[in-house]
Image (cartoon, rainbow, N blue to C red; front, side, top):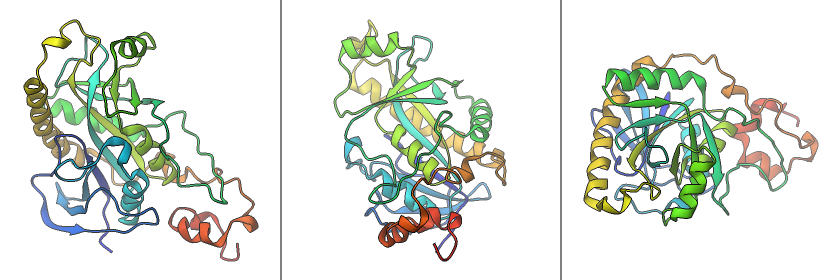
Length: 290
């Protein structure tokens, strides 16, 4: 199977990747079903990259409908060791206006009913998640935004809501009082699953609006939001071209050993079906006879 170094997830408004060379579409079937779309695999800035449109090309899936496990597992099948995720978001701060790119280093979960683990059904694992974003990706992304002349803020908290409706004003005000910085509907599950898959993960949260807390919210038109989506998509491509050469070839972080001490289940109690389903993730920690 075609192998890649880096996975790219494109969010709302970012459905394809310009500048690819020697591209091919790879359709995968995972133990959790089909990913959102085919992975477009190719060479970009000298790096082997796989691109996935999070909601499918044409934006066909709601955030709550996304098969997060299949999406992340597909990148693992392709050999990706890092994932850079681009996503549209709302700003909860006056100093993070539309067209700003935010690089959050924390997440807060307000979704419900979503599966955000590969484990269960006979095998238990508990990853550490105090620092959910790979530090080795934040620096290159910040530098890439600077080189692409895109306004950037490093750090902050991304609150993940369920959707698909946006917040009420009451909810938006509460999130601001909690100190949240940006709000979106997708990245928390991706980050957890990437950590379980031992893949480095970082989010580029691209601000399209001020959410509904802002006093000028009612004067914002859909056309204005779409204009920000288009501009952000163009800037995302620029940032991607700048960041790929800056990402180191080797990994010095601990993301690649996240499961080393996380599997709690006694090895002789792991069901054969769970072992088969999770082999790509756990076989490195199990001896052949286990």
